[in-house]
Image (cartoon, rainbow, N blue to C red):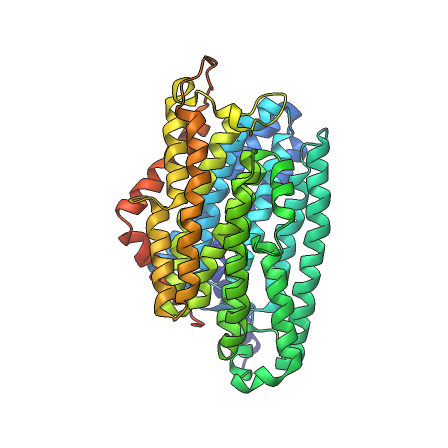
Length: 494
């Protein structure tokens, strides 16, 4: 082959590979611009400029992912180390949307608390890039790179309130526990690599068969990765870091983590287990089923006793991880479609709940006690109605998105033969109604408090958008369900 032809092929292949990860490339470009802007602009102008770059980068990444979803075909990139399939695009759309909501919510909060705004938005972009890498990874090496990029950014964000001892404690705890979780994941990946002879997830699926269940290396690798993934997804009994970190971190960071980390971790679980180990499904399904049952019981029972809204929602997140894991355990198109649907709607109902708490914060610190919600129905009716929608949606009341999300998950679980797990989930959902409705009591109980809760344009838009989506995507779930169906059929089907 002539040298010129070979060079042309190399450039065309490089462009094709970049095209497969175009949403990530777009966000990385704006991330680098934001870093430069933070270096050259005066301190008084950095925050607004970097926020603008961040929102523009997230928006461009979102539009790029949407364009590729509609008009481009997915394929492997970089020798099967990454992909641009519909599964990856689904999560890139989710993470870009989360990034926009986070910047919009945190803008007024950071100024109110006197924090460095530009650094916060840069860290948010870095964390979202890590999440997107996890969604598009088709190699264990790429999975670990995305996981560490996400984790390192979050370690710093948790300790962003440098003068607050609780924030520093949260960052230290998250760093230590995250390091343990990463070690479990890495050691498990090393054992799977030793048994399969490759780190490429599609090739692992081809090389390992049902007879590999007798290989102790593979079984131990599955166990260690399962433990590490459970840490990342805040699933019991590996959840103890969650309430402490959620309570100590600044509220926008907690809101961001509660949705983004969970979605990225589930994308990682589906890629590695359902995509790379389909012939060993009985082994990892049993492990995840036990974790799901434990999470639902522990999360719901512990949430009942909480007096802090942050800790209540932290334990709620543990229980929600158990519900979502039912779809992963069920597997197949129906199970994965239910998982994708629930993760996307969870973005709005859970982030929206944290957004309301964020807007209650004052210059002296966060206000996350039940007493801080007293009289909110009179002090700010918009926030009161929005919080009601979010709580009822998380509890699973129809016609909210939470009801349909649980319905799809439970239906998939029953169809796959996990009736016992679904029965437990229904019972625990009934228990959860108590503490979700408990949040609403001080909101609508008459109170002598007359202080108003001011709202900025960006924060108002965040709350209203989340509230509308929590209703609209439940009343009309078909569109998102079809998107979930497409996303559940990647180029490497499980």
